[in-house]
Image (cartoon, rainbow, N blue to C red; front, top):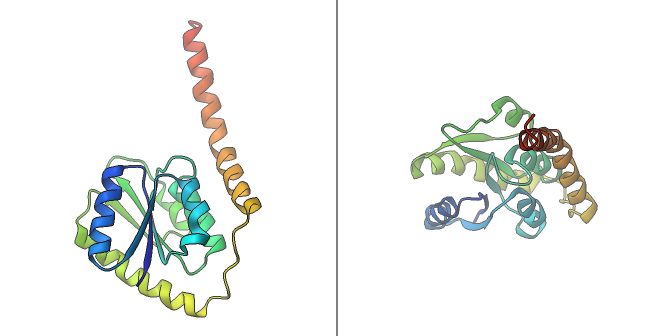
Length: 167
């Protein structure tokens, strides 16, 4: 049985994903943000991660980059709403195996997932023994995410302060 890690901050998406996937015989574990997904990777040891591209904390793309650098057999599917911006080129560079736009039919998700789960199982057999993620590795991933988001956060904060001061 393949294990699927579902990372989405929407409770509705979590419930629907779990219902669809467990109904097809997959073991499903869900988390609500990118950091939780990174922290639980060694414990869950999933075959496929389905992550919202715009997760809070580590984005889906950052999570994908982290997964591909530490768990080579794991396949990653990123999801995003129809109007959400996703840098698909960056997602592919991070190693993303597929991108699905929400809302999607269950059959589309399953048709995308099944071959990736098989490839992950095959990759698991040929991959060198996985290394355990250490606190330092996770800290480095979180620090990287903060470095990426800090300039945007500072710009937003500066604009809010200037607006509050009437500038």
